[in-house]
Amino acid sequence: MRSSSSSSKMKLSFDTVFYYVTDMEASIAFYRDTLGLPLVSQDYVACFDLDGVLVELVPLPPGTVVPGSGNARLCFSVANLEQTLEQMHARGLATSKIKEKKDGKLAFFRDPDGNELCLWEYAQAENAREIVHSAVLPG
Image (cartoon, rainbow, N blue to C red; front, side):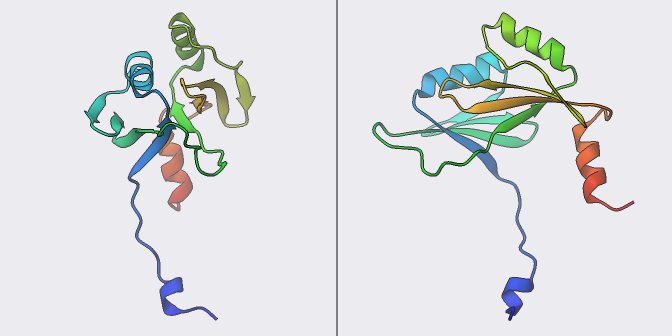
């Protein structure tokens, strides 16, 4: 039996994506200097702005284990994967080989803490938001 509260739609809005990091300065340098994300604030956490989405780095206290064993990853949409990979390799970043998928192609790399990140090039659409928008809205 459903209660009325469980059948009502929750109103959620996107806030942030974050990674625990062990070396805050090395991680800030990676996300700011290597990847080029704008650092918008830094206190206990470091916040970067990626097209209006906050990407936060949160310090992991020494001796602490990251809770859970999830498989989330941050995925960046790029217009030209080969060109982006050339730029990353020129900056000393190791990446996976390009993997062809039905709707595009992707490659993986890791941040200083080993968090897996992804680069994705859509096969046909010029704008990733167009694909998401058309998949969510009818017609």
